[in-house]
Length: 349
Image (cartoon, rainbow, N blue to C red; front, side, top):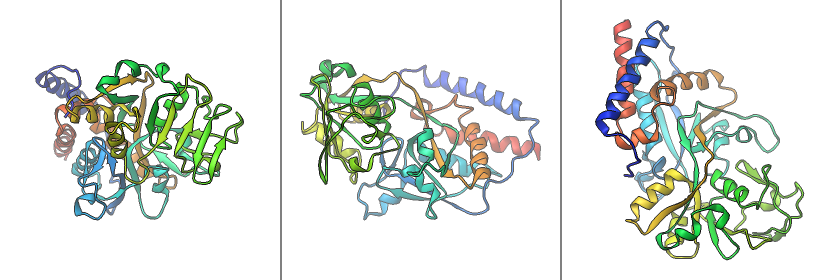
């Protein structure tokens, strides 16, 4: 596991104890919370975002593919352990990330997760209708570039990327969008720069600078669907290569190691994990300054469930004081918070 720079585990535990005690004292007068659900909830999770949310086995035909692991998996298990919360989850892997957030509005799932950045644009479907709520943010995201160790110096800043470099991305992710935005391939609204050439199954499409050619973290113009590459109109912009739609982000890491791409643009947590697992052959180079939060989605017609989940998630994260770095140091951190919740309930009873 990656060890992010932090105080010692002992000090972190003391600090956590202080946060927990404050939370118990602050909540001492609260009324007992009602149950969130009467039955098990169907939870769809993205299967390929190690270490945040992933399947134990990448083979979709294996039993392990249905076993949920990672930060979000442990957060869910702690939610199930909170007495009186009425939460239990039947977990189902989802192999494709594109518009995964909208699947909580389908009959198949009650909740969807998997490292989903909270964005207003992702609450709406293609017609602009609101379809989902996001729960309270429980994890911080920022974007970065993963590259080979020998190439770190030439890719330690987004503004160093040029047309001779091939940067891999997963479509409809914040990693893709921030890469395009930071390098000038799109503007802040996602409109492609004039002259960008896009390889699609229907052939090459050339953007004219109008809003007929848009790529955002929530989707893209119909003509740009299932794109495989972007070719820049200027030397100071990189090529973008799209992989992993069906096989997940490991396909991009393999392409990076095979030198068919020069960098991989995605969330820093996943890139840190890949760099650590590579034994030093891969490194995180450029890092984006922008901070965003990740959460789960719930159907727009289930506001009570969303509010109830928010209350329980905020308890487990101590209102965002506890997050990914704490979990890395101690994967039981959320379960210990659930135990404190249960002890308080027992005292009140």
